Image 1 (tube, rainbow, N blue to C red):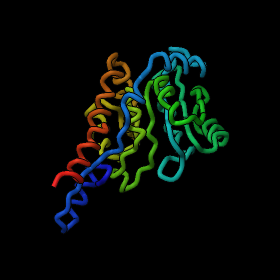
Image 2: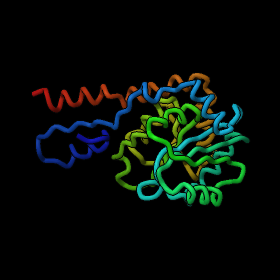
Image 3: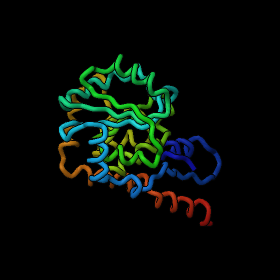
Image 4: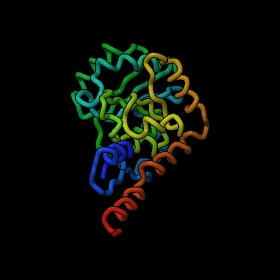
Length: 231
């Protein structure tokens, strides 16, 4: 059992054994991460972001498999989205140090909030946001990953601005209109694609269907039945 279809296909090509291979992506509970209008109003009020702000959110670590804070300079391109841009970073790392780095590498007219919250509180912050960030470094085997945060973002209806080459979604993300793979050499086109999704008044209802299609526990259930119970 693997977490990506691409790795399942890779294994089927290199193995000489007659073995069963099944892809089981990291699943999420759609109800747990469902968008909530009241949570949106509450968290934006608490963080002092009015309705005119477009908010991006990143949940996770920095360094290692993920971008270093110094790599985040590319986020300055997001100013093309709106004159009132805010970014929320929910991270378990050194938050004071991250805030210093953000002040160093990001434009002063991008308002940044750095916090750590329990996992159960993450959906509240997702509901308060407008799009999500996935900040993995590029590496050869990145296409074999299945970041659980992608399913959480989609379940809340958030389009993802994603670095390239990560997971099966790097092949279907834009086709499914679940976000944009950022192209540093053509940042304008990337931001325009994201803007188009955000301007669709129904995108918050459409995107959770991507989570159901690719990251549901029903897929996990069926895979285990096939792999373990069926003969």
